[in-house]
Length: 188
Image (cartoon, rainbow, N blue to C red; front, side, top):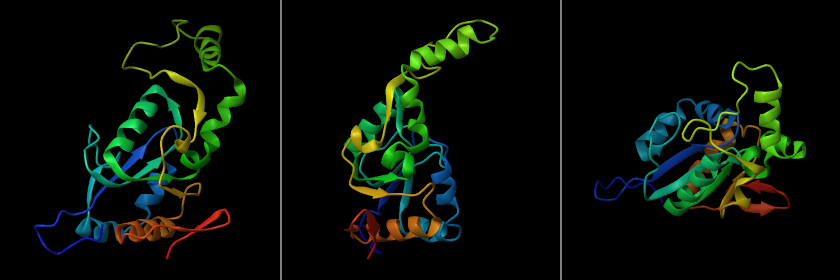
């Protein structure tokens, strides 16, 4: 996946995805500052919440996925991005383990939670929003990404620091894969 200076050779295609999470991983991605210009000179960002592309494209080389799988839209996008990406990276602790997003799991059935919030608690209409395309259906349990699709690389951190993101993306673009040492991941 090393970028080539030959105009006939395709540039690496990178996507970043935001599922159920706080967007802290994307904020850390933006904290890579000037390196983003270096990345843009070598690769194409073809999908990202910071690029506002609406449809996930085909032929993605590296896809960084932030957030856990919490609702039907997340689940659908996870399957789509796996089918269209060569390498999928669990990007941050919510994608790796469920982390904060999965804290709702011990509360039980999400429908009961919605009933309490929208019907039993003071609300103007007393109705759980459920119109298609408005609020995606919550899954019974929040899952880390690897529980619903195959994941190639795990990039932990809440959020991963900018330096770790740069090292990981640089290594992946150079064709390297992480070397595991116990539970930690080392690059290089």
